Length: 563
Image 1 (cartoon, rainbow, N blue to C red):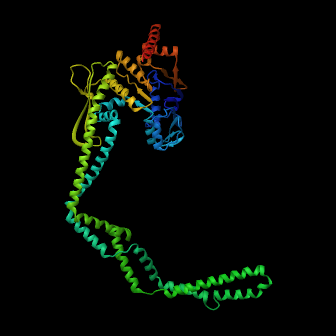
Image 2: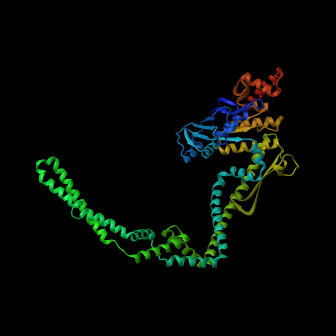
Image 3: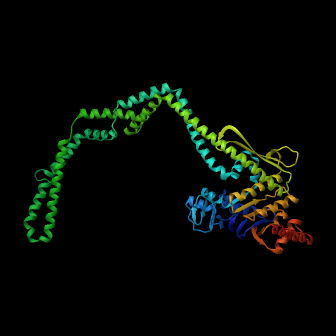
């Protein structure tokens, strides 16, 4: 359940902390008092879209924080494990969302920074918000299959996953087949081009990374004379008479004659000179060998230049290096092998595509059978719930029709058909249902799915719009009944709904120094009776409306005691 909600600088709410209980909560108040801001705050916690416009004027940021206490076996803990969010057994969940004036949104779950996608994955297991947009989604036939599949999820999901796996494989392979068929029209031209390219690459007889070695050889041959002069000059400076080596030898001999007079100081210096002599001598021998091996070969240089010109030409056509060119040659060779057996490859691929289509169609047929069996169950459940909502004569059908076209959901079109009155034909919801009827159909579905989805918090934003009288009372009782198994929140303007609540909050606003402030007040006893009387009678609260409010509250208590 949701234990508490804290809001700072969200629209007209400067600061508010609200503690919640189990059961049915209602939020009432005058239009414009800020009731929708409570829903917006919960939407942010569930991963909803936030904007700078939601930040209170003059503030740097808006902050919303919720504390949840889900059951130990709730599916949200599995989601935590999948997403790598740390938690302890029997842990609470703290979700914090910040919006700042720079346009950035920051979300944290149990102090761990998360992105909005992760927040949505967690939030959808904690809060389900029913707003006016869901009425409109119910009118869109394409969403009906999602609702039916959700109802049949336990049996349908494994088959649907298997179907989507084969359907996606069929889709990918079919695309390759279409591309291959298109290539067949250009096959002969492509074969000639590929063979020319392969002959050009093969005739070069490239060796892996030879361009690197050739560049090194070219630089060395092109600078042979300069290399010889500099190396020879260095060698002579070291090895000729009176050169570095002779001077080192002379210095060594001089120290050796006096070493005995100060061994502590002179012996280490003598050893360093001797070591330096041998090192310099070794360098001299290596320079001499390098000098003697320097090659003056204009013919070889010309040969290397021509080879590099050939390689550079191939690079312009096939890749940035010899290794890439060689790889391109192997790719062309594979394509030619495919072309050599083009008809056979085409036939084999067509056979695979057909097999995958048949596999997909078989799984799709299973999906149809499952949907049809659950369609009847869902329709019966909806009719049963609608009877409780003062729609006793309603006829409802979940129509499943199969097509020959496959898509991500199979081969079925699903549509909800509705008739509110006896003798009237079933028609699409979009063509016949009024706003009040839609509200009750959606509430009936929420009642059914609340048990299936295990969402601990359900939020209804004016689900009672367009209803009054007995229908309003029926909606109130249904919301209260749903709240026996989960936490329910509802914004309402109807006293019939408000009186059925277990917890009643009044959202009010005031003006101070030309600024609007919204307060959230938990109503108890007489204060709740007064608010109900206001909802019944308008601005003026009379003894009669107070008496009526008291009676409504008592009737609500009596009704709930019967469950």
